Length: 282
Ligand SMILES: C[S@@+](CC[C@H](N)C(=O)[O-])C[C@H]1O[C@@H](n2cnc3c(N)ncnc32)[C@H](O)[C@@H]1O
Image 1 (spheres, helix red, strand yellow):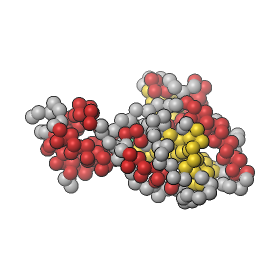
Image 2 (cartoon, rainbow, N blue to C red; image 1 turned 45 degrees about the vertical axis):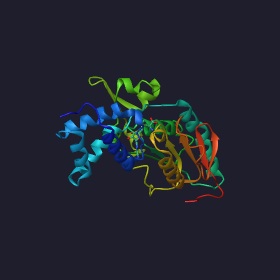
Image 3 (cartoon, rainbow, N blue to C red; image 1 turned 90 degrees about the horizontal axis):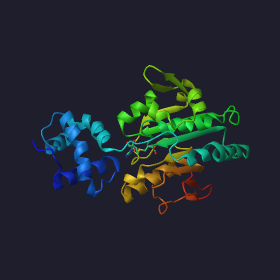
Image 4 (cartoon, rainbow, N blue to C red; image 1 turned 180 degrees about the horizontal axis):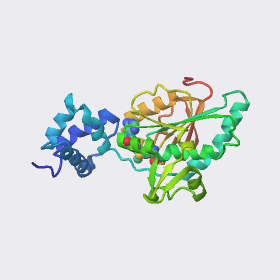
């Protein structure tokens, strides 16, 4: 069996399938990367060739393999406090904006945040720490953080909330001991119940609408860079519908949504706010 590299035709077939399943547009120059990633799944499922694996994926029986396939082709890199200025904004200006809106009667005393494409959980738990640090300002407020992804293995890691020494190095030391339990033998750190209780993790494909609406803030970072222009627009529209009027969208450094805003207004390099007037008011 020749599993050295996808042929041009196989590459295009997998490219189309990945696009249909996730909105991700694999660039033409990633043949080797995609070959390497898919080869692992071909071997893991006991198939003989890329073509046989593709036919299996497209068959009824192959549905059970779709998660493994998507897991293998997505990039799941993440870290605690990734792009720190986003969290500096969250724990200060965002919290103050929510309190002000509540004071003016524009919202109730609750904060709902969605970490869309949360990978292994570092993003939603960072959000949870930032809000927990404001517990005095947010006394008697209801806090909910939803993390979602399409990668099952990443979501399992997020649900487990167990991280190695390398991973937690980005967390300030006093926060680490406040929000994590150390297992010295295993050299791992586990998210404490008080933090975990704020976070729920569910599967969600960004190319589909989220039935959950009314979010105060959505984090969409380091994922739309992999999407085609058309699927990116679909995602931005879905996310906007899930925000409440006056809610915020936090984007990564390369998301590139500046020309598909609809009722979003630009507030800074990484921040958009859904208009209080006009546009969708879901
Ligand atoms: C590079 S990680 C970014 C994680 C985190 N947001 C951050 O900035 O560190 C991208 C994540 O997007 C997820 N993803 C890719 N396409 C998706 C889709 N269509 N729906 C939901 N998640 C998707 C991948 O599984 C991966 O976990």
